[in-house]
Amino acid sequence: MTPTSSSELTAAPGGSAAPGPIAQNAIRPRRARAVGFTLLRKVGAALVVLWGAATVAFFAQLALPGDRATTILNIRAGQAQARTPEELAQINQQYGLTKPVILQYFDYLRGLVSGDFGTSYQQYRPVTAIIGEQLGSTLTLSLVAIAFAWLIMVVWVTLTAGRGPRLNGVGSTVDVVTAGLPAYWLGIILLLVFGLGLHWFPIISGTSPAGIVLPALTLAIPLAGFMAQSVRTEFERSLEQPFVLSARMRGMGEWGVRLRHVLRHAVIPAVTLSGWALGATLSGAVIVESIFSRPGIGSVLVSAVNSQDLPVVTGIVTLVAVVYVAANLIVDVVYTVIDPRLELT
Image (cartoon, rainbow, N blue to C red; front, side):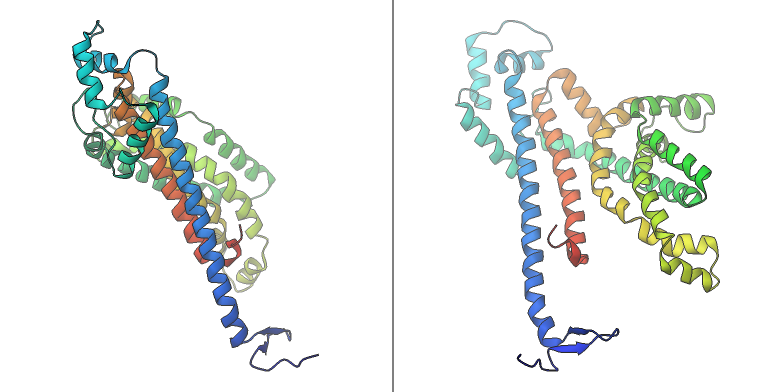
């Protein structure tokens, strides 16, 4: 047997051999390659999802009944009527509707890559400009809702998890019930109670700080219940770990143990879900902004659907897909870089 040099192995604390400097230098390139491959695979999967979402949005336009040129003219005129061949020819030329479908599809993808979502049928303006005017309001609502969801989840799980079968059962039941609450029902209830009944918040949200509370809570409460279900399990498991016993033996109080040690380990599943939460709140804003008469891309989407303004509809749908995939990709990348155990997952 070939002897192993002392520079390759060093004694570990428990007496076993641990990789020395030479072995560690050999491991680092392999780990870097594994991380790089994993990141490339995740980016590739994200691009495939975006391509699929854009493709579905494009062919959904073609699946609608009727002639597209006639539809565009009727949208602009605000009434349905027969159109002359000259009128139709002008629209077909403007939007390239006479091209083969495959060429229209490639033009559509080329525009998305360059940030061009087309021109609104109704407003005669670029879709990117229409979305850009309302995106800030919706992003603000989504971020405030996620912050509220984290606050509600942390407080509720910390108060109820690991407190005995009865209280823990109540906490788990509340998690399941709140996670299943429909946004349209919850929004109306909050509006009736705190807007019309108690007059604590404005009925019409607008853009005021007070006006964002009820719409954000409408999105946050179900999200908090969903995240609490995963965090509660990890919280109870962490309470049984040796480091909790060690902290208690050092004289740390129950709240100190829960907030300083247990919670830090238990919220990892919620961090993973935060990327999904951003996409979920953006899509949920469609309903919430309509209920509370709040400006945003949700209100624009509802208006575009009612008027059959397809470029605006597909632009918003594609944008939500991009934000959703990008947020999840960022979370995956951060975890892959931070935690080496995720290299091959």
